[in-house]
Length: 298
Image 1 (cartoon, rainbow, N blue to C red):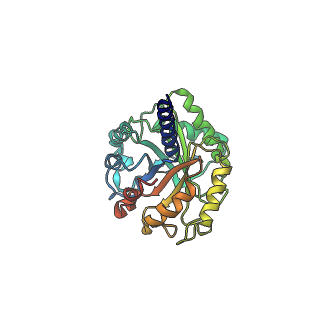
Image 2 (image 1 turned 120 degrees about the horizontal axis):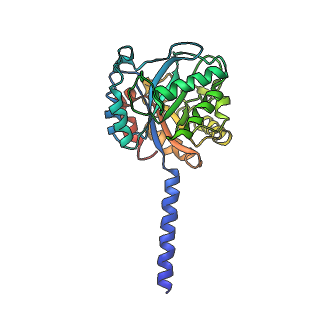
């Protein structure tokens, strides 16, 4: 009897340990689409390194503009050349990878003029990239998993309205995931109010090109303080550590693999909101092999 009890206890302890380990396990999100030399979308997902792929970017939308997607050298949307990506998207999803459309970017032409404008943009996104119907779907019939807000310019107005309108479509069947890529200075100047809605599933904070809150050779305090602020103040499902995938991918903020795995990740993984690491971008990851080097530690 005593032996049986001890065995039961050891099984319970093992289950608890597995659950504890699972709660810390994270995934890697990657941005794909801004360099024609980064391989296909299907090949990206086939690596097994990524759980989330953001298609970058829908660069023009809102304020009466004709929406325009730009996937650099991958395809030409003006001649319907990007509809062939539909099979790649479905291939990714079949492997359990969530595929989002990232709207905005650092050099796009976008803004929202009003709440009504936000509603119209949400309708466009639903019909052309999500579960709605349109005769001119730029990426073909594949239904994306959600929308990523990479808003890095213009005004901070009405992005909260866009989030609410998009989220409302989740009631029509397939879940519409909302993600965002704010800068690490808190609160973010553009999507700060949108993030307060609590509608975002994944928030990959850009801890680069922002020296006051990023890692600097051996000094992790600034990053830790910013991380604690983000994880305590933002009602999101999971928060990710956004990093450049190589030193060339950003002006500053690259973290060498040994520093990331031995110092930075152990200091942030204790948070219940820890979701993993986001990398910019697939092209730079190809050059450095960064995701392959860290995926077992994330």
